[in-house]
Length: 84
Image 1 (tube, helix red, strand yellow):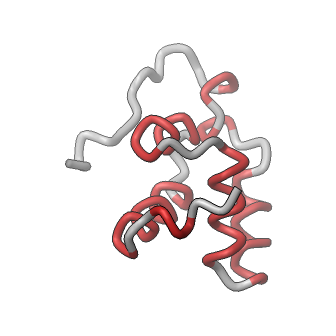
Image 2 (tube, one colour):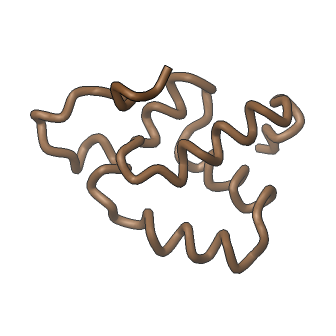
């Protein structure tokens, strides 16, 4: 699915920012923007340079903080207290 047409430039920027953040799970992106993990990956692939996308995928693959099911049960928030 190509959801990149559905979002404004600022929304795409925010999705990319959230995807890069270590502590923001894919669930938060889905909650706020309706994009599944796979759709977020597709958006990242279409919006980033190939080398940047590969670097990002290497960073997030298997990362506990990006996948709610792998997270410690004590962590129950979507966003940092610093976000608005």
